Image (cartoon, rainbow, N blue to C red; front, top):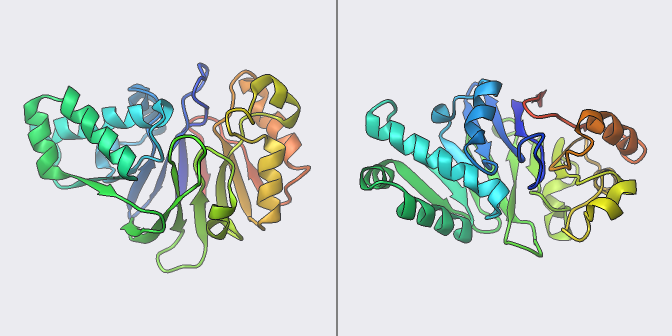
Length: 269
């Protein structure tokens, strides 16, 4: 399985794209969030990702830098369905608020023909805390991350069907106690890191309910995580971000540490 980072930045970045990614292997693909607009198409093209071939999509929460790109994705797949360029079913997962908002955007913005096509070929799947769905032939369990802002879900996914090794994405806030059981000892943890620890006062990571590189790495070390991927970061120091974050993080985390740039691909298994 490969992790394709379409974007790695937080909401207000201008030098990179908002955080979103695709998990892919020979069985299919699973896209998580869409970033803040139709730039998702540029990112996908640059990464060699064909969005219309993806059948499963997940939106973590309603913030603009996560959901707005998915509205473009939904418009694109319904338009291609209507044109007869693709067939079959597309599935969009999210908690009730996200699904309601996504459908509301579509109903207010799409032409009647696309709405009719959406009704016929798109399934909106509302997930509750602890629900498990089959995606890419694997069990994927969604969980409420306990956000103090907008309601937000993460997920944990089998790396191999029926296997014990897992990948866990805890959204774009620090992992809380309610998500501990989904992250403890996992092979891969995807965790936000807003900035370096020394830069917290400048970027106000804590004010926006985010963590520093140091804090994310301390969490992963405490939980016995094998590999840690840091994302959802500032882009002020973009050219040096990888070097600086790795230098700080390796002081606090002994496992495999990754600070990907946009379009970077990580081989998970």
